[in-house]
Length: 491
Image 1 (cartoon, rainbow, N blue to C red):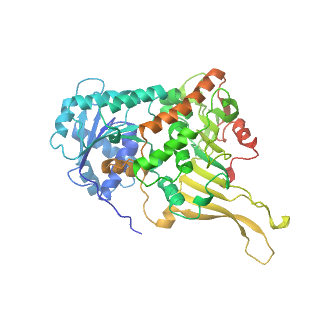
Image 2 (tube, helix red, strand yellow):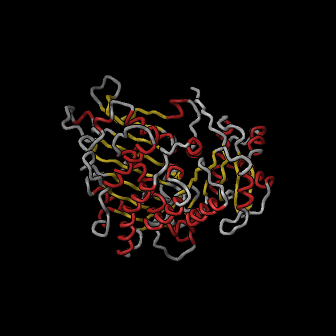
Image 3 (cartoon, rainbow, N blue to C red):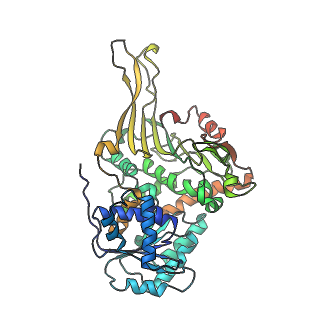
C-alpha cells in the first residue's frame, strides 16, 4: 500500500531552542523524514535560534550529527545534503535584545510563506518570545506559534502564559502541542468509534464496565531531573497526555472533524470530570516515587539518587480513579496510571466490557473473561479485540481467550509517521484539530489543581515502589477495592 503524500505550502519554521535536546532528538528528524517524502515545497526554510554563537555551517554540522544519531535515514547522503541546505541559524538571546533584528532581516526577505515559530524552550520564556516577535514586526496574518507542554505550573500560571500569547497571536494562530495526539493509534481511535457501526451503540456505561489508561516508562528521569523535580508526574503527564486520551475515548461524537467541533466535545468531558480534592483524594489517588531496584541494565538508582537529593516530595508515579458525571459514563470508572521505572515502556487504553449476563457453557469449558478492546499507542501501535472463542479440535467445547489483532505496520505495510511529523505538517496546513485550545488547557488545570493542593495539605510523602515494579501496592488496592484489577496480563 502506498501512502499518499500531500505537499504543504512554502513555509519558514523558526525553532527557538534550536540547539536543545527536543530539536535534535525529535523536531529535525521529523522534518527530515517529511522532506524525504517530498512534502516540502520550495522555498521552505528551517531556522534555528539559540544563544550559542554559531553560523549557518556550524549549525548545520550539529543538525547533521543529530540526524546521524536519531534518524535511520541519515545514510541517504544526497538527500541529507539537500535538507541541510535549507537550514539556517540566528544567534539570539531570548532574554535580551540581541539577535532579534537578525532574525527579522532573515524573515523579511519574503513575508508570503507561512511563518511558524516553535518555542522549544521553558514555558517562562513563551510570553517574552511572543512580545519580541511582535516588537520586531515578525508576526504576519499567516504566522503560527507552537508551544510545548507544560503550559504553566498551575491554572494561574497557565492563564498568564495564555494571556501573553493571546496579546500577540489570535487563538487560531496558537498551537499547543501534545505529541501523544499525533500518534497513529490516537487518530485511529476516532475512526474506530465514529466510522464503524459496531462500537458506538455500546460505547457507554450500560455496556462498558471500566476503562484503563496506562502510560508507563521503564526509564527514570534521566537528564530531565531538574525539570522533573519542579513538575512531577501529575503535571508532566496527567494534566496533558492522560487527560487528552481520556477526552478522546469518552467524548460525544462531534458534528464534524473540524478543529473546534472536536475540541468542543473534549472540553465537555473535562467539565464533566467529578472533582477530586481534599475530601476524597486519599481514596481516589495514589502517588509514588521509585526506589532503587532491578532494571534491564542491572540495578537502577532511586529517584533521589537521580536528582541528587537526600529526600524529595516529587511523585514519579500517579494512579487515579476518575468518574465522569454525565449520561453516557455514569457508573463507569476510568483508571489512569503513569510512572517511571515501571517494568516496560507501554502506552495503552483498555476498554473492558461488562460480563455476559448468563453463561450457557459448563464450568469444564473454561473461564469466560470480559471482552476487551486494547488500543496500543506504543510500542507496536495497533488494536486488539479480546474475545472468547472455541478452541479448535474434537475434544468438546473448550473456550479460549484470544485477540483479533490488527498491527498497523503489518496491516498497512507502510511507514507510519512519527507524531511530530504529522503535527508539524498540520501546523503548516493550519489544521488545529490535534492541538489544545486555551479553554481545554485551563479546564484541565482547574481539575488538576485541587489534587495537587490536597496532596500538599496531607503532607504525606509519595509511597515508595521498587524500580521494575508496577508502582506502589496502594495502586493495586485502588482498583481492587472495586472488585477489579489492572490488566497487566494483556499488556
